[in-house]
Each structure stands twice: as C-alpha cells, then as structure tokens.
Length: 264
Image 1 (cartoon, rainbow, N blue to C red):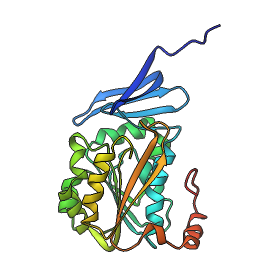
Image 2: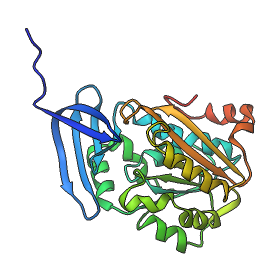
Image 3: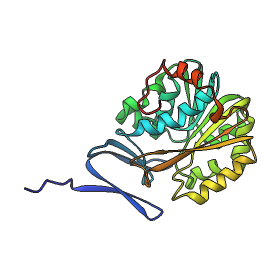
Image 4: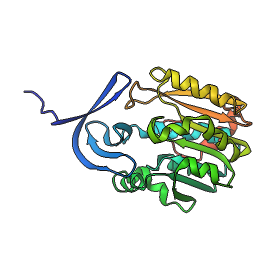
C-alpha cells in the first residue's frame, strides 16, 4: 500500500540547486512591510521559518546554526559583556548569547517587527530569550543603527538574511568600516557567509574586504542540513583575539556551565 504524501511541497531555489520540504500544514503567511514571511510545519523537521522564499531555520536543526554563530566567537573573547545582534529577530542568537554568564547586555536591532512577533507566536522555544531583562530590542535599520550609535561593543553578530535586497549593504565595505568604529579595542564581529561552494565568489569578495579592516579574519564552515548545499560558513573579524589560539582550558571551564547540543 502506497504511503499518503503531503499535498504540498515547499521548494527553495539557490544558484541552480533546489531544496524541497514536504508541507504538512501552513501556520502563517503574510507580506510584511519588508518581506514575505511564511511559517509551516514540515515532515521530519518541524516548524520552518521562511523569509522571501529562503529557509531561515527549522526546529530540527536551528540549534546548529545558532550555536555556531555565537559560541566560537564569544569564547574567543575572554569576557564579553556588551553584545550587539543585527538581524536575528527570531531570537535564536540571543538565546545562545544569554548562556554566557559574563554578558550583561544585548542590543538586538531588527528592521522587521513582524519577524519578532511571528517567532514569539510560532517558535516560542527559539525566541524565549527576547523577554530577558538583559535584552533591549530596537526596531531599526541595522546599518543606520551602527552608523549612529555611540555604544561600544565587545562582540557584534550579523545574523542577517543572505546578501540580496535590503541585506546586501550588510556585506559591503562602508558598513564594516562603520561597524569597526563601534567595537571595543579588543572586539570581534561575526557574519553568516552562505555556502562556500555555491557562493564562493561573494565569500572571497567579503573576505578581501574584511582583511583590509581587521588584522585577524577567519572563516569557519559547518554542516547545515536544511540549507541549500548543506555546507555553510561564518566569517569572523577580530581586532585582537585569534579564534585559533584561544586557551582551550578556559573555553572548557566556561562551556561546562552551559548546555549546548552541537557545540562541544
């Protein structure tokens, strides 16, 4: 007897590669002021958040992305206290930052308030940290915020969508020159930089740009099952500390105090 298949499939097309997920039910779909927002439940991976046709996360594997954009960088800094997140309205990065006892304050700058509202309604385990007293949410353009703020940060996390449309400027020289000015003298930044195989050209271009701004630039890769290509990357820019020379004993002491599923 043939198995009954879902009546609908979601497909993401990226540089000639197509990723499909079987949709069990549509939970939310709306066009906000900035983007198309789509939440559905899919077989095997649970709830899925899609922005402008691109998968942002699934309940099944989001912890991989969020643990790896945050912990390698925050552990590189010996005592991160003040952190800025640009984008990340789903709350996953904030959730992981809050696991670090040294962090006293997080500014989250999200341009689209509807992303936050949708995450809090449909992805409560992911977004729970947004209500923490250490977190201040700014509904603002991240580029404008970075250019105008007088606050200095130990770590800046660019948890953005891919470098197209309104997010494209987050990957350009002008923004990163402004970002450097709001880092403390020993600060670090990290940005998601897509698939190094399918987006090799843009990754190399950004790497060359960051090398002119930061004395230390590192790229690290990981497997993300529900992103097109599966092999994904982050790029770190640092003014002082090198992720490759951090004291592992210090990391282990700090890591023992928290719970992670992928980072170890």
